[in-house]
Image (cartoon, rainbow, N blue to C red):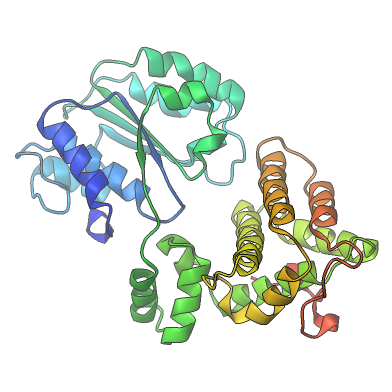
Length: 351
């Protein structure tokens, strides 16, 4: 568990000192990209505050409490996850989170409840959870873990001690991929760039997913505002392939966001690209669009993700609306190079 933590020494030292000096906050907000180790640090902290032999981390200490945290069986440490759920509702907060918090510590100093993907809490659930954050049970610690802190209400964020986690170095991710997945250096480097500093995201990539990325982005780059049939077809394929698969939909939005970022970087003369294997296509698109338009498109991507994931908008219709806004205006720059016949073929069937 905690032996796999890479980096974040500053954040971990803050937490270790808080435990050593007995100034632990009742609530924390761990925010940062997916797959950088936020959950692991939260579990390490849960071990530190409940350690019975001097406040060591579970990976460094051999006491019974730390061993239980390491194995995930400590009675006072709960990891609350809602896999496959788009919106965490009020009843789920009461049953899965508050019920655990209001139990007195059984053998440790603190009852620690870690809520993963806290951005899934809908507004009603967040408002219901406010009273718990304002008047927490004695000897309890709440840790909200999220990759999208902006999805949480300001009143929730203001009642938590924030701790931000940055992306991991690309070189570190590439080295791990070369060692664990046996990828050649160039391929490992590309995966590391596409993952945006998230080791978890990088480990989920494979050759088929990367090809799906190329086809999706090439299809978007080749669309014009007048290609209604292409827009409808792409939206339908993507919505069908992502039906019931939140991770796949999130991945598509990650690819689109990085694609727009790369075009903007080329526009301002930066070569710091994620999609380095698509540089020629990206450069062609950059010629026909201004930075302000790219920023607006990026905003529309974020809004569409929110509408689908948080507001339960119809996925296909929301994607159609997004693709219309992403499509090139007539005369708005050349289409990317490549075989146009492959741009829309089986995009929903990959990954």
